[in-house]
Length: 463
Image (cartoon, rainbow, N blue to C red):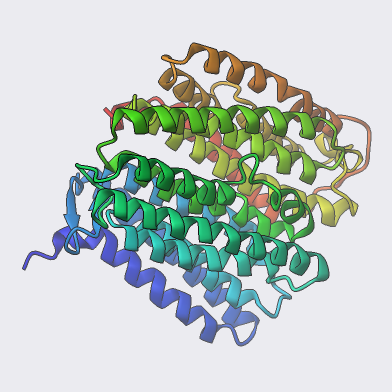
């Protein structure tokens, strides 16, 4: 039996699973914690290298485990985005949670979240998505509450309760999907009940859009992002989004959709995309707290990503390229910016706009890095976020009015990103303080620039 085709999934699975257990036993003192932290980072880096090398060696285009997983380019890229986002969040969390009693649990749960997302990235079967979703979702709910302060627990409980409600829609959606297609495989070719499939897609979309935080399923998001620990949210707001994006992408791209399904998908995601962009922008304008601004701007950012989902069954290659690039830009920026807020809160005691004053003079590297991440979300070239939006707008060329609405909303977002940057250049007193959070912001900014320069190659990868 040739085991080579299984290695791209098996090696990261073994590394992550055993490391997630090992860190729980290693963390007995500060030295043990440093070892656990190093093991976690090493495991994530090794898994990233294995996936990257496998992609370069073209180990894709085939199924494994009796058709449960299908290795393809989007699956590799989404798995790699997951690991990159986790490493950025981990860079800030390492020192931040040194005094936590639950610090080893955080390391373990972050790796388990990644494991679930990796399996969903290659999912070719409904059961794989259900299993990966259960692992990743449960881990993110726990991560939100791990700080164990009152605000984090309150936010986490709200997240959990609403998450359980959304999970019920997912179960109903998959039930309708299986009956309609007559198979557990995501690669259906014929339909027994076309109308039932549309209902299933709608129910599944409701469930996954909750996890993404799209309007009108964003009720949990502002409280969780502003109340929970900043370090925890650097992970939940970035990698946590992939728990919803990845399975939805697999469901919409692997099957053979009917004309009616294509129309239903376009109508559903165009509507939610526009509402998410408009509502996210309008509410973000009224906020004075940077954490709150980032919370509502993330809703608007999801609106841009959903443009790709709207046309994914019409212009698959370009839509996938746009979704992947924008997700990568968002994950890097979001993980870095919430670590930035954690560092800022320790320096000034607040995350309000006034707390940013003097940063450009006192810590130029941090101010420049956070500015780059904000400009990436805004979509300024040649930073990575620009290419994500450009690819998404190009993929929706058949819906020019949607592109116009998106461009207007993208320009309007400058109204709350630019004031954040402006406050950094006002007079104030902020000194340079070294920390893991600060390092993670700088790393994220460098990645946004470097990957932004290489981003046009994404179109080559997607053909």
